[in-house]
Amino acid sequence: MIATHQLRLAMGKRTLVEQLDWQVGDGECWSVIGRNGAGKSTLLRTLAGLRDADGGHVSIDRRALADWPLQELARKRAFLAQARNDAFSYSVIETVLSARHPYHDNRYWENSDDHQAALAALAAMEVDHLAARDVRTLSGGERQRVAIAAMLAQDTPLLLLDEPANALDLAHQVSVMSLLSKLCREQRKTVVMVGHDLTLAHSVSSHALLLMGDGRWLAGTTADVMQPALLSEYLDHPIEIVRHGERSIFIPGSPQA
Ligand SMILES: Nc1ncnc2c1ncn2[C@@H]1O[C@H](COP(=O)(O)OP(=O)(O)OP(=O)(O)O)[C@@H](O)[C@H]1O
Image 1 (cartoon, protein in one colour):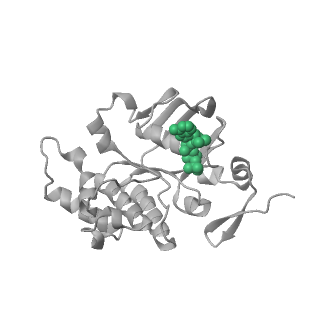
Image 2 (cartoon, helix red, strand yellow; image 1 turned 180 degrees about the vertical axis):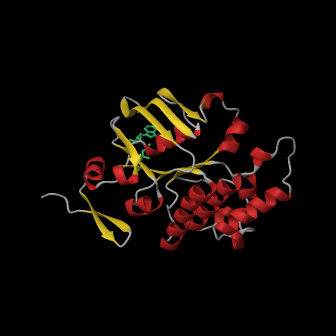
Image 3 (spheres, helix red, strand yellow; image 1 turned 30 degrees about the vertical axis):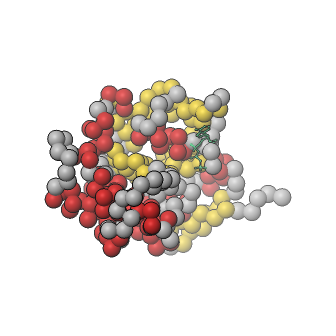
């Protein structure tokens, strides 16, 4: 689905990611893990085509990102940014309908398919009762769920999400992450997301990419990569795993004295 080839990401003089050769297959659910400032958002924005690589390149379906016409790209990948600024007064339904623009070749107005997709996405995120509300009046968590609903309405095979669980209460963190995992398993959608909750990431992801923030990286299945020793190294803090039935709970250990 999406791949990077000798990708280099830098910020000023600092190299964040070096020689990243990484393949993300259809139906895989990846978590990108690393310390604050390691380059996770920078990577996600580069994958989305919102920022140029500092070396190497990104391809989607074996075609370089630069060769994708914008409208086609918008039907291929959706991107959830970490922060949102609503400068204007739009209703929730208008916001979600606007995500349908990639499907409007020669028309300005939405049709019934667009409305159906928008309403289904609002219902999936349990914000359908807020359809008429001005987005600027929503709580942080409600606004986040509307943003995810817009992504779902965009109906792309590839979903790139920067901290989707941000601002969500516990129940919605679990339901949103479970939905993403289900989209991968049942609809073969591909998810790449950034998150700081290791337990949540492990429970829904098939794979993980660890970023060190100095160029180094490690990619693999969650079983291979989400090991205490590796996570402790990449997060620069001891991490322990407690098994609870089928689940793995990731606990930050006490720092060494
Ligand atoms: N526009 C910018 N100008 C200067 N430095 C920037 C800019 N954008 C990002 N950076 C720096 O690049 C580094 C990587 O930032 P990035 O947002 O990718 O980190 P992150 O891993 O997503 O962090 P977090 O976990 O805090 O969200 C950080 O040190 C950040 O301060």
